Image (cartoon, rainbow, N blue to C red):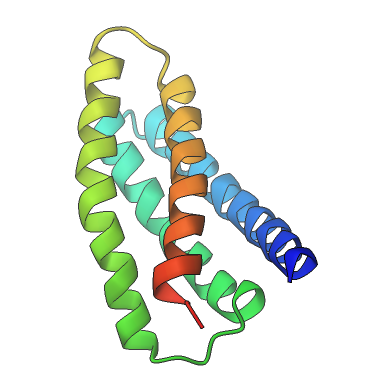
Amino acid sequence: MRKENVLQAVKYTLIAASAGIIQALSFTLLEEVFHLPYWPSYLIALILSVVWNFTFNRKYTFHSSANVPRAMMLVFLFYLVFTPLSTYIGALLSQKGINDYLILGGTMLVNLVTEFLYQKNIVFKQ
């Protein structure tokens, strides 16, 4: 059982890393090319990464054929709390002069850990 949990965490981390690349690239594009402020750049990039992460982790990490609309609703509830908090705190830190990419990295790490635990123990609990 322990080996299975470790393998699941590794798979989740690899897929989340690919979602992180999508988030970082889209965030950079929105900030550097379109010159959007922190919060809309972060919000759009987060949504893109969440869709990617949910789709691939449902299939490859958790091997879930459970009710997809229910699972999506549970993930939506997670982000109903995480998104406003991380967007607000990130915008505050950005206004204080902290580097936007440092803020993004920190929120991505918090998201990685909290979402894995939430999906494993609530969304795709078997």
